[in-house]
Amino acid sequence: MAKGKGKSQRRFQDWRGRSQREHQPAAHQKFAPRAVKIPAWRVAGADNLDDLPRLEGMVVGLFPGGAIVRAAGRELLCGVAGTFRAPQASTALVVGDSVTVAHCPASEGEAEQDDSCRADGMILARAERRTALCRPMLRSGKRTDKYQTESFEKVIAANMDVLLIVASTCQPRFRQFLIDRFLIVAQRGGLRPVLAVTKIDLAPPDEDALGEFESLVRAFRCCPPTGEGIGPLLAEIAGATCVLTGASGVGKSALVNAMVPGAAAATRQIRAKDERGRHTTTSASVYDLPDGGLIVDTPGVRELGVGLRREELAWYFPEFEPFAGQCKFADCSHSHEPDCAVIRAAESGAVNQRRYESYLRILQSVEG
Image (cartoon, rainbow, N blue to C red; front, side, top):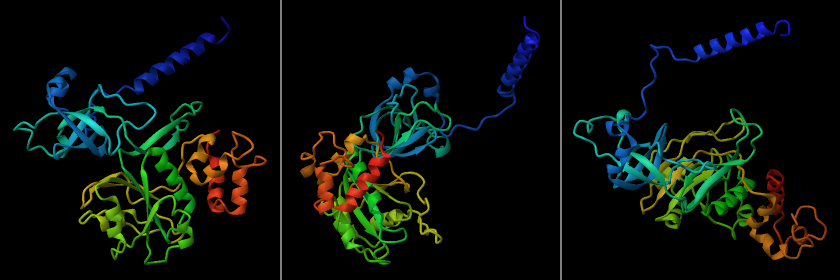
């Protein structure tokens, strides 16, 4: 045995023993109470879930360890069953998900309990999502394998019909390039985009900039404080399930308050030093529309990934379609190749040059 080797092994064993003792909870240590009380029928065993009635509902809120599910005309506080399984490549549960719940009718003693110790059922399964508003997130990063770089879909809302994109004329400025990305996200997720331009009382909308989107999305000019433009917007989305999205500070919560009487969504002033918004909404909130349907208010974003491969991006710019077939190369990226018909169309004005610049920007950011 080499000199000093036995001492090294003893030091390692002593260190491992101390580490294990330090990570063992003390006998008197008390843990925080559960966010939702698990009823006796759940503790007794998962087999008891089979005897409970099933309800189909929609997730309208989330909390640590469970979700609020709207089913049978009421909102149920539900835990998640141990047998629940969701695809690993996306968020397990989000607002808008259709779920199956094992409902536990409240007994006479439990009826008086407050929400902090109430459980109305357990979520057993989630239906396949019809549409999804999502953004990609790389798995590599803090507390993850740095060599695992595949994309993870962070779903913000599911099963929505309309993506209501909110932009402002000023404070913050009208960001055309961000709207381009939202249009891609809407197409990719299967949602119908609608554009609402707010703060028209502070500055008139740039009609030239809005004209670029006329063939791509219906646009509505709105002033939430006065109610101008709110009626036509409500008529456009009546009876639909909608999710709001847009940059921070554009007035999403103020728009909700104008569309839904009594919503009382929180609003904040923008930062004066850079005219950028603050994150007022920190989680998705659900509101019922007066003419049917519902609207989901989501936290604002400052940057938005599209989660596409390079060869897929051109399909989300429909104005390229008449020219893409005339390119010299079948796999043309429309960025630098010789004899590219899309480049020629952008130079001649047949394709909007600002939109083409947006395409090049996004192309640089997507994976190969």
